[in-house]
Length: 54
Image: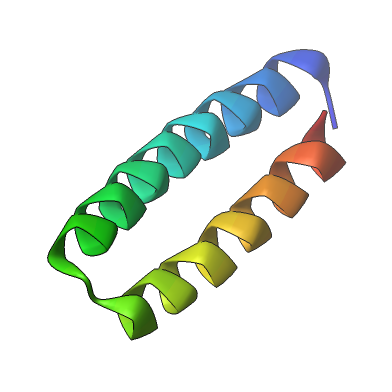
């Protein structure tokens, strides 16, 4: 994969990860522990994908 495409994917994944962290913050404020667990798992998957792209 070429460098610009990798950077583009990394940018998208980074934004997605940031949005997911905000969703986690919101779920924590609402006291929704199950939703937090699901969102944390999603954030971890995004983080892993981000590491593999970089």
